Amino acid sequence: MEVTLRKCFELLQAAKKIVITAHIHPDGDSLGSMLALNHYLVANGKQPVMLLDDMIPPYLAFLPGSSNIQTNCETSTDADLLVVLDASDIERIGRISTLVKAPILNIDHHVSNTKYADYYYIDSTAAATGEIIYQAFRETGWSVDIDTAICLYTAIATDCGFFRYANTTPRTMRYGADLLEIGVNQSQIVDYLETISLKEIRLLTEVLKTLEVHHNGKIALITLDARSLDPAISTESFINYPRNLDGVDIALLFKVVDEQTVRVSMRSRHTDVSKLALKFGGGGHARAAGCSVNASLNEAVEQVLTAAIAMLQEG
Image (tube, rainbow, N blue to C red):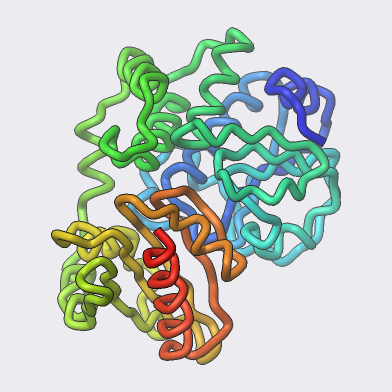
C-alpha cells in the first residue's frame, strides 16, 4: 500500500520492535539513510536493530553509528516492522527478507521499484533515499544533530556525485546546504571517501587492462574476478573510468562472484540504464543501475552487451 511520509512515521511511532535494513553491496546512501533513521528513532525513545546481509565497506566505516550495524546475520527474529531503505526489490536485501518476520515499510527513490512492501513511499525525483529521510525529519520538526547530519550528507552527496550528476535538483542542493550549516565538514567526508589503499590502486591497474570499447565507442566495459578479492578492497569507483571516456554513453563493470554469477554495474550519460538492468532482473536509476546475471563471465558479457547495443540502436 502506498503511504505518505506522515504515515511512515506513524507506523514507526506505533511499532515497538523495529528492524532497519538496506540493500546488499551497501553504498553511502543505503548506509547513511539507515544510520540517520536509527539516530532519529533512538533520540525518540525507540530501540531499533540494524541488520545488513553484507559487510560494511571500509571507506564508509567513518559514519557515526556504523559499528552498531549487525552484518551477515543468520538468526531469525520477529519484529513489529521491518524498514527497508534504498532497496528497489525484495531480493536486494538478501537473507534479511527471510530472517525477519514483520510487515515491511519500504522508503526508496528508485524509479524501478517493484512496490513489493506492505507499505511503501517512493519518490523517484529524490536524488537519494537520504534526501527523503531528511525531508521527513523536516516535516516532523525534529532538530537534526551533527551525527545524523553527517550520515544524511554522505547519503545525499554520494548518490548525486557531490552535486554533479543529472539527478541533482535545487532541493538536493538546499538540503546539502542545510546539513553543512548544521556543521558537516564536507572536506573531511571527501577525504574518507577518496582515500584508497595501495591494494586498490594495484587492482585498478589490472582491471583497466580488461577495458573494451564497443559499438563505435559508445559502450565501454571492464571485468573483475571477485572470487579471490580481499573484501576490504572497494571497487565502487572503478566504473567511473570507462564512464568518463570520451564518446562513451554506457559503461559496464562485470564482477565475477562465482562460476555462474556475475554482478553488473551500469552507468550512462544519456541512456536509461535502469531499463537495461530491468531486463536482467535488476534496477536502479536512469544513469546508474545494476543487476546479477546467472551465467559465466563470457555469457554475461555477451548477453548484456547485446541488450545494450539493441537499446542504443532503438534510440
